[in-house]
Length: 136
Ligand code: CMP
Image 1 (spheres, protein in one colour):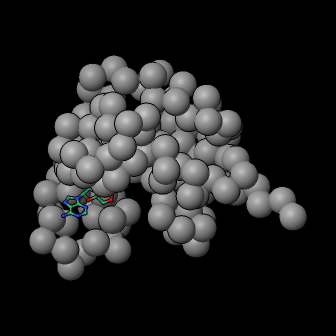
Image 2: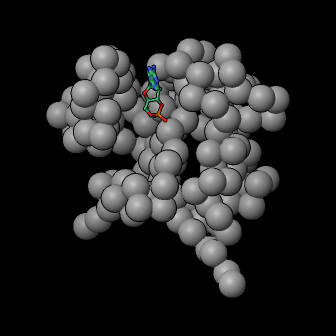
């Protein structure tokens, strides 16, 4: 049975600012991901709050939303077999200090906040997150 999936990926402000966009996209392509849709945008804080609503009760919520809206980001719909899990494996642990060799966050992440990329954590959230940025 085929399990072709789509997931949402964000290249966060710290990575866009360091011009890592093409290197990171290359890492996705090397792992077999197809970039179906992409756009470079800057969102405002209220949009970031909506996007990260799932984290609204967390102590880091305010800083997280301020950060995501602090500069340009690249949002992408990625497609591959098992895309959701595959993307999480390629990104590595949320905290770059815990990420293993070969992952995006190990290579480029600076801190738990400036961890270079976001990826959907489930198929259900992937649909919601793709719609959030690409529904028109
Ligand atoms: P991301 O995958 O984009 O999802 C939520 C983000 O919150 C996460 O990456 C981190 O960048 C950020 N964050 C900050 N502090 C924490 C924390 N203690 N635990 C999890 N995520 C955190």
